[in-house]
Image 1 (cartoon, rainbow, N blue to C red):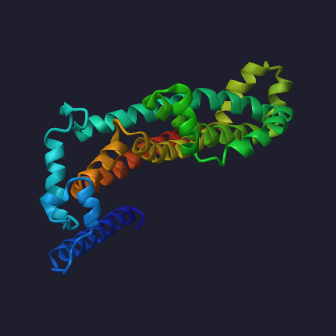
Image 2 (image 1 turned 90 degrees about the vertical axis):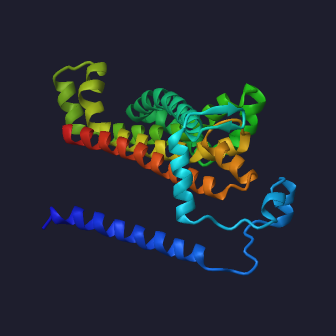
Length: 281
């Protein structure tokens, strides 16, 4: 019975997807008067109205599928600053996310460890954490651009800012939640502080730390798209905004699908690591 449930869930997922795509395709075939989905004045502003007459119908699944195949045929082409393959743009975004996320992990996990082990330090730093944590990462972008004066590095800084808090808070919570009995046994055995940290606290807190890292990667992938729309240049977020300026809705839908799939892969990789750590515990 349990073995059949994953198959049934997968079959239901495919059925729902088929229904959604079918309704989408039928709606795209239905004639509608005044079918413009983009303001003609805006289309004229970006120079696309001449080609479309101000009419930009929403693409059908077949049109989106055709564009996906075109992108997959040559995803890494570079023909100019504003004409690069979706694979190249995705690589820029992933590079920035991994750089900012990696730096955040190097800062947040050790600091969270220290905060979790020291109630005094936790009490001293907690007000600052609670004030800084709710600030939107994009609010830091103007200051980053002003001080760093480089859009790519500023994007990495924003990813660092949004990634650091979930990892820091979860690490501190995981370390502080280690059973007192285990710490007492370590003291009885006269284990050093460093040995206790690596042999007792770290394995016990690892699932909570990994959960924070999983939350952070999801937030980082969300933020990089918005940051690249804001600063432009390169990246999957810039690709979406550039295609909007070109009124290429099929490319926008394609990019949205790519963003969702990559986000799912990143989340599942961290979920697998979390499960592996939990089983070892």
